[in-house]
Length: 333
Image 1 (tube, rainbow, N blue to C red):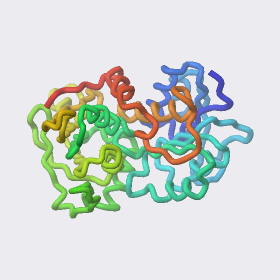
Image 2: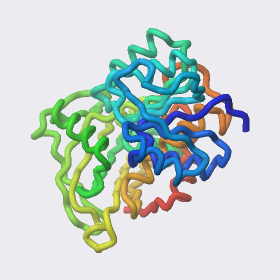
Image 3: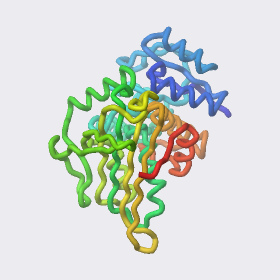
């Protein structure tokens, strides 16, 4: 494998960054990695644990990211909110791929504008989906059985003790502060709804009920446009998980319900849970690692400049296979 530089992981010492680095090292032992963080000692610890990685301090308030002069990078991955978009601009200036997962649907306008202004500068993966897109790709894999998809309902239960590290908690707080409104596609129309109208009860696999609400998330738009389904919603809830109730630690559950018609025109439905006993971290890091693998051409051809979402780059069946390898369980509802 020939790489002309190192993969720069902004926030690489955090939960998403360190787990993504560990996955990439497992898949590609010779891939150069740079763990970038504000705390150099912490970044060094992660780099030592990953092996064969370097550590640097980073300042996202600076256009040059405060990086040492002369460094060469083959990709920039923002595993935390790139609020000033200096990470994106750095990648564009150097003509290397960029991936992000913390903008959320409500914060993507600056990213989209930056790519629209410089469409030929670099490939940009906008992966602010749940778990960096692996849920959307799984739903698309299951939707392949359908001739027509009418309704997609996703319900995710996040354990209250599994909201992530400081960066993940900050993302949740920022999104909650900006809006409490719901968002979904109804009868082909993308529409907002008030907080009260968007509340939905989610049932865990063990029968426990948790109150959630439809949320503005890119999975809704990705799945609506990829399948043509006129009704798509993503319900999110934070509460105790089945794993915690069993005493096994925080788990994560995502229920998927698909309704439509099969190849013969007869009604067809799929109701299935995706469960990971170790919570959302393995899913998010897997989604980010898969996206980066594709951006760099480590699987398939290298991606040309442009703006991409996970389903535009990744094969649904391959994602489901990787999820199973990572310990994800698929259980019929």
